[in-house]
Image 1 (cartoon, rainbow, N blue to C red):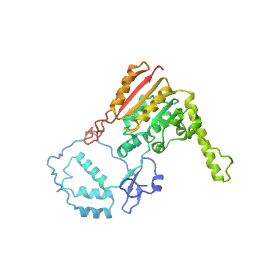
Image 2 (tube, one colour; image 1 turned 60 degrees about the horizontal axis):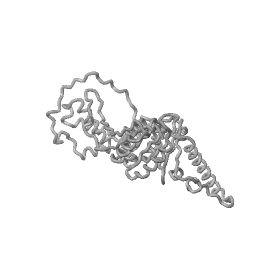
Image 3 (cartoon, helix red, strand yellow; image 1 turned 90 degrees about the vertical axis):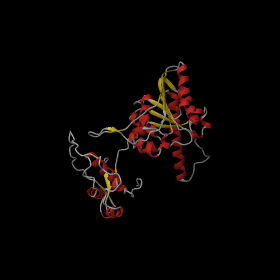
Image 4 (cartoon, rainbow, N blue to C red; image 1 turned 30 degrees about the vertical axis):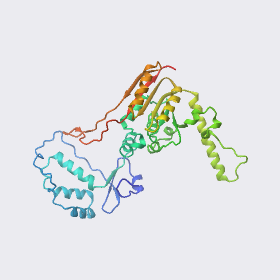
Length: 367
């Protein structure tokens, strides 16, 4: 497996290590698990006597040349390179303790090749997609995702109708919240990407709560006209066992699809959640119309979108009607902090856009 610009990491090294382990690339080229030593207890009160006011900013403090650093990296591991850079820096000893830690951390990020194995939680996966492939998850930030689950009142044992165009990330978060009890009817048109759902490594009970439903099946009054629910019947049974096996698998899938549609039409849902991209406004409107028809009184609605005007117009319509209460249109703001002894402050460099999206929510109270 590959991680960014790092050399390939053997799968065996990853599978044999528990979550939280750190794999570091050695001089030999192999990846070894880093053993954690006992961490020194931090002092309650740090007395700082040095200061950085006389440090030069012309890169003249480092006595090692770039060629010497490259030679070191061929014969030494990353930690040894960082130690050599620190010992050959004319200003390292005069830096404050905080500045020294920052210096070592910066050099380690550049010269030490290591990865940390993390459990694929909803928050970790959402942040990773947001940083690397924002378009795949409709620009959905983790605080917006958690707020959507809260506004939709996602809880164990409830039933939900969902449009998730965020690579299955919303569906996966809801499945985790349900804990194997409840139903999630995922409406889709065309394709049904489940990359985020698969990467969460859910249990079989949690996966069973997700039931895909094609939008055409909900819009069609006759199942025979819906290709998604149609079983092809031949005149004779195929003689080839492989073909017969594929037909049986196809028939089993169609039976599961029909059961999902019947279950959705039998009882109203407790919540409606819509996450669509900029190019899916028409699809979101169709799902909203169908979802409101199947939403039980007292059910919650939550929508995420990047454009203010359509959601604001919908908010006004809901408020003027007698069918909704607690109608809200919100925009969230999150600021990350560095939390360290004697130096807790907001991150100095952070990506922030003027508009990350909006959430429209409300409760249905009448027909």
